[in-house]
Length: 150
Image 1 (cartoon, rainbow, N blue to C red):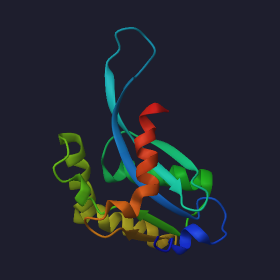
Image 2: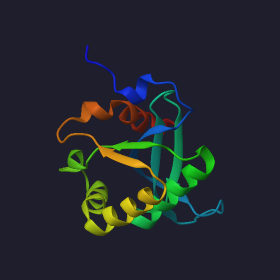
Image 3: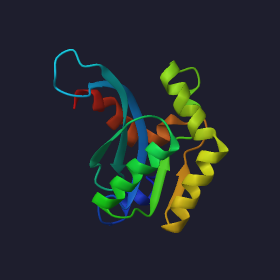
């Protein structure tokens, strides 16, 4: 078996090193009234690499603003993280239409510039897993798999 990443082995406070992924869409009612229309939402899954604790944030859509709002809410509840790990979006190729929107968002230059500015201001390092290697994100992908049952 290969060596585990340092972030998974070193003693640290919860959510110092996190993996992030999206899941969804989920359809929720705006109100509890009968015959209310359902709106499409997504979940941002934050997984602590040291403790495997899961934090779920509801995301209204797949825009940069919605993602940054979810990240701000996460930071306000759990504190600043030192490292964020995500996949690089190549696993979304060939996925359904909703995930195509997410892939486009993550690869846009505007999104990456805004996210990098937000992270640089807070001294947070963002790392992507290598292309075509979904096993690097197995910890947070397992949380995504379990999310619909929450």
